[in-house]
Image (cartoon, rainbow, N blue to C red):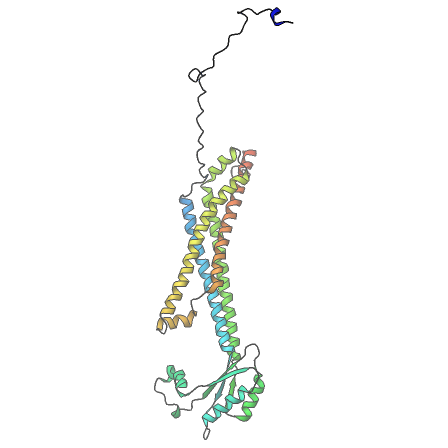
Length: 351
């Protein structure tokens, strides 16, 4: 069709153009929601209470005693091994004085004969001054060896891994130097080995007793501390907390207590050995140090002893943690048992 023939729409039918809305005429915005703040979760068990502090002190005391016993056993064993090694790597040739015997020549000949055997390393002739020092505690100072029939000694160092033939050496010395007597220290070594084994066995027995007392003390102390928190276990169980969750929370709590207590006891024992070692090193050649060295040896437990202390700390922490877990699980089972049968009050049938 021609544009001129098209009918025009009335003015009223036309849709008026809507003016653009300005910022001031915009619809009011929705108020923002306030952000929710989540309160930090607090531990189920209080970090410190009377039961926990008492348990920590008990664990520290038992850990100190256990580590002290372990270090003492390690020290005695090392000292006994040192004594045994020192005795077993030397033999002694003793020459008794006689009329007309040239002592110096006999000493040199005995040393040369001993060094001809395979397994010997070196020989040392003890002179008059060294022999006098050996006899000084019994005969006093200023001793003249020419006035007394004192035997003279030759010290022969041997190879511990490949010792010489002592029987053949003894026969040769008896033939060439009749006044010579060979002492291979076998009797002393056997006695020392027996004494060392007995001492280690006694120390091990004491250590076992200390560990047993420690285990029982830790178990009862842990159960006593848990009995004061029984109501917390009941509330958590009643609101639907899983048994593993409750046991895990108690396990973490008592793990911290046991680590603090055992670490304190173990550190105190290690510090005691270190202080004793420093005192012994700084007080050499004194009567107190000499007596302590003669009785206990050197106060050095070595790397093995300190590793044993660390292992003791770990064992104590593990025992405390397992005790706490088993006790909580048992408490939950008792609660379920009482709920299923109200006639039972303590998990046992009512009389």
